[in-house]
Length: 244
Length: 244
DNA sequence: CGACAGTTTGAAAAAATTCAACGGAAGTGG
DNA sequence: CCACTTCCGTTGAATTTTTTCAAACTGTCG
Image (cartoon, rainbow over all chains, first blue to last red; front, top):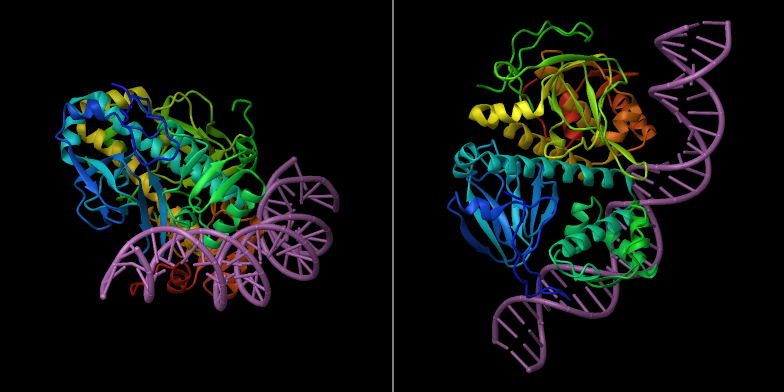
């Protein structure tokens, strides 16, 4: 049992090659193995629709099949922050395991399809199937590492650098999903980026303009071209790789 | 099998009553049940010693029995950030599950005892014992929620408010462990608080002075008295409770 | 009694936010 | 299909917050 997701072509990506069967990196979840043991239902959501809301009864995990979601944490006093964007292959809802109700919101940023994995069923299946259990545990641990990695980034980098790190992360995901890592369209608005990056949207906008004027990237609204990835990496404090 | 830790008296806490058998809240782990199935070894560390380091082979989880640890994330370029402080009852090392080596450091802040839980053993034990497995999964999910909750706090509050939220969190933990939530000694230096809170140590110092001058708290070095918890909660954006 | 690590404070500089305005894109309804 | 409205993104200028750098102070431990 491996941690892979079989990819299908997305039609609405910029300059994307047709991705065939591929191997997803961190955060991915073995859906094919899962489907042999659990009743998986496919569900479609339009942009803006909630996959789940904080407070609703927790009953399922969701695997993103296409589109993009955001997870959004909320405080009692109305403060809100996007804790992450979820892409094809990501398992969503794991933060709510062990609770009676979901602890945050999950919202579709664009038309998306998710595969619903009923939780009690997963639980009983994974108690029978050690590999599946391992898979789930690994997905949880991976989520912790991903969150911690962003905490490090947000806690130590300036606004411009955070934005650079964000764009590199998006490029990375694009590449892993078989699309161009040099030319893509952001699926979230500036205010959503800024919430995730713990900045104001004007600050993100200025950082983008700065990176554009530095000739690291070219920005036209949400359409991004990465012109000098090494420079962008330097900005993000990730050092420079020799490979293009 | 429940999520509890049997407390023993700590000698070096300020104004702490003798805690008896008690129930720990979120983040706690059922060690008694665990010990029936796994060989647990007790290990002692002095202040400054590493429980594990990033890059070392991953072989165990650790349950904090006494003292306090910190987890510290590091970037390739030397940036560093404390991702959390770990108290009695916390399970440490879960972020590295599924990897060959630990992904961060764990360091004792003071003389501490941790119980070492060899990982392959836990894994096989939890595949035999569904409750233990559930317990582990829940601990992982709880860690995600705790991290996300801090991400929200750090992403939306100003320096003063972050410090207020931090002190309330410490007070909460003190209380859960059976000590006074109104009078305690911080176990970490300002620089460690500031790393966790994504601030500079001078900023933390100023925030503490401000809270002191507002008569929310009284600060004398690391010794803290909470004088007006409701006011402190207001500062931290957590609203006001009517109970003292 | 020093030495030293840790904390506090002050003043200047830098970074990010706030508020306001503008322009353009996208969506709605006639 | 166009006019209208609303949402989104960008930019400017003033303000606030945080950081930086420097110095002084405190407590602890040889």
